[in-house]
Length: 485
Image (cartoon, rainbow, N blue to C red; front, side, top):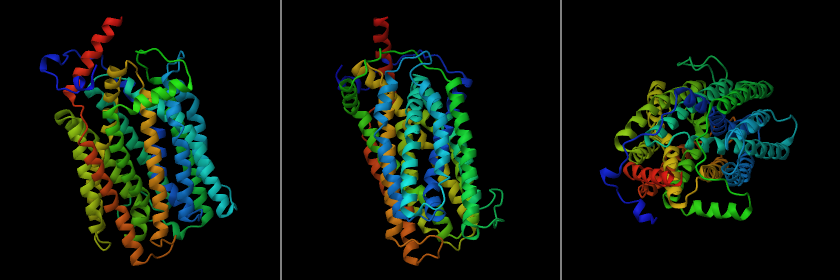
């Protein structure tokens, strides 16, 4: 079928009235708990790993940024291969679930090792340890996350239920992120219940050994939670019926599938928009500790700030899902990008001498806009239906492997830019920063990420698939499947 036929707006008569079978709440819950390894890894790495190696291990920012960038680029190259393998795996446990079971234990172990580097390695030894440990951990993460995301796209074919699945997963993601941030921020700040001045010393007031032991202990606890979430997802999820026959594994078949995936125009548009979105937030998030500690002198309030942000995000997930049901995923996602741009541009206008309550309110406002970032994964599931109509194949694994590849590569570039940026503006660990350095932190934290969100918005405005078009695609797929049965 020609692409112009598929992308034409269907008439009301072509929209199917029957809905696919609904998922049980238990299946949604079990699958969503599999997001815990993803959430803990992302929250801890985006907010604490760079800080841990620069301010506790005392690795120079540019070496730490380079090690993380190398690790993420190397690992990202594995994603398409893992996606292709999971698309064409056959076992009594399905295509995706065996990878969850096999990878989650080594994932937890290697996650712990990153937070427990040996003493006395020196600058280049710590650089090598960080780079190699990160590569090993993210290799395990690839074998877990790519099949896990692909499994989510298979759970439901319904346009709105897919958003429900993604929203449930995002809720668990938020809770897992809160857990990670509370555990790790207690080491550098204080209890999240202390809204006023903290009761614990910050990094500068604690011994190096105490800090290292604290991060190692938190890493062990979080690793256990990751393993538990992955095992629940393996045991409690279900896989849909395999619609297309697996291919015989070969490099030529892999290459053909890879190229065909990239020829999907809606996917390319979504992928480009997602890349700029990830780059924006991967620039922003690692600087949170630096901003609140060195500019705003709110180190003791870091746990409270992060907890408020994620609780507001948790509330916002349902609001953005409801908005997507009324105006469609596309418009809701565009509004989410616009919201993010506004708050990032406005944040540097805040002053360090403002009452802390102002920052709490502002952080809540930021979090209320963050729930919309769950929508792209639901949109990709709809794109996969469009691809099946075009090619006759189901390639969830390959689609989401490219998705995670872009996520990792752009995040790697961003973390490398953050490391080099901190060096460029003259940041000195655990010392009073100059006014020029603080100005650089403000610009790196707000306006620069906002610029990349704006580019993402411009790209996504060209996205062609709507809810009505997806309904027509589903109708044609149902007719095709009925003929082949």
